Amino acid sequence: MVTIVLLILVLLFVVGALVLLWAIRARNMQIWLASYLRRRPPSPPVSGPVHVMFCFVDHFEPAWGRVDLATQRERVDRWCRDYRLLAAAHRDADGRPPQHSFFYPEEEYLEEHLQKIAALCAEGYGEIEIHLHHDDDTAENFNATISRFNELLHERHGALPRDPRSGQLRFGFIHGNWSLDNSRADGRWCGLNNELILLRELGCYADFTLPSAPSDTQTRMINAIYYATDDPLRPKSHNTGEPVRVGGKASGDLMIVQGPLGLNWRDRRYGFIPRIENADVRRACPPTPARVDAWVRTGVHVEGRPEWVFVKVHTHGTQERDMDTLLGDASHRMHNHLEQTYNDGANYVLHYVTAREVYNIIKAAEAGHAGNPGDYRDYELPPPPGIAATRAMRSA
Image (cartoon, rainbow, N blue to C red; front, side, top):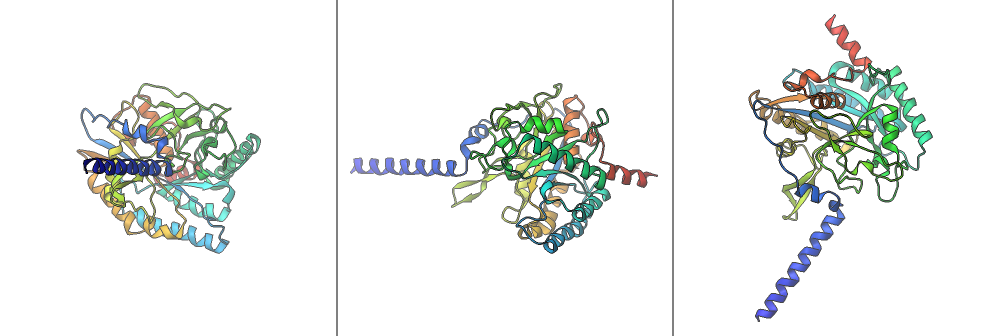
C-alpha cells in the first residue's frame, strides 16, 4: 500500500513538473525567468523621496485591422477629443498633465492624422516618435524609409528635435511586432541583423520596444536601462548589454529602455499559475492600483540612482475594444492612484514624462545629477519645434 501511495505521489510530481515546464515554454518564459528569479530589489535611497517617472508609450496604429479611412478618422478623432478630457483632470508634482508618447507607424502615414496628433501634442499632452513594421528589409531601404519619415515628421508636423550639437534629427523607436534587430526566432518582421547600428546612425536616441513577453523576441535582460552593442552577423544583439550607471558613459550602439516585467501572483490562471506582468494596458489587463504598485516596486532605474524610478507602460491605443479602458474610468483610476499614492512630496514625487524626457533624465542621472529629475526633462535633447513654439508663445 505504501509503495502504491509513493508511486502516485511521484507520478503527480512528474505530471506537475511537466505541466510547469509546458507553461513556461508556451509563454517563452525560459528566456527571462532566470533573470527574474535572480533579481534583487533596488536599494532604497539614503534620504529624500523616490521620484517616479511615469511614461506611457503607444504603438499608435490608426489603420490597425486594415480598416477604411472613415474608421481611422473616428479612431484619431476620439483620441484627440477624449485624451484632452482625461489628461486635463490630472497633474503631477510639476503641474503637468499625463504625457502620451505616440509612436506612429511610418507605413500608416496620413497627413491629416498626424496634424491632429501634432496639435494635441502642441497643447502639452505628449510627443510623436517613430514606429515601424517591416519584413525581409534591407539596410538601404530601412535607411531611406526612416530618413524620409524623420524629415516629414519634423518639417510638416513639428515633431522630433534636432540635436543641438550635431544638428541631426533625433527620435525614439518602437519596433513593430516586437522584432527589434531581427529578434523573432522565425526571422519574420525585420530582416536586419545590424538594426541597432542603423538606428544609431540615423539618430535614434533609445529604443522603447521592451518588454515584449510572452513573445520570443523578449530579451534575457529585464527591468533594466542599458546600452546594447550590435553584432551585425547575428540577430537579437540587445539580448544583454551594459547597464546605464551614474558616472558612466554611453557605450555600444543603442540605449534600451525597458518597462516592468515579472510575474503577477495576485491574478493567477486556474488559481495557481501566475500571469505575466508585462506593463501592457488594455481592456483585458486594465491599469489597476495593484498593477501600478507592482510597476513602481519593480524599480527600473539607472544604477546608482535608485531614487529615480522609471515606469514605462505601453499599449496599442487605436483598437476599439481597448479605448474605453485607455480613455475612460480605468485610466482615471490609474492616474488618481498615481497622484494620491506616489505624489505626497515626502515619500514619493510623481513626474509625467514623454519618451524624450525619459532619455534626458536618464542621461542626467548618468552624468551624476541628483535632486529633482523634473529639472532635466530637456537636459540633452530640446523639445521638438512644434512644442517649443507653443511654449514660446505662452511665455511671451
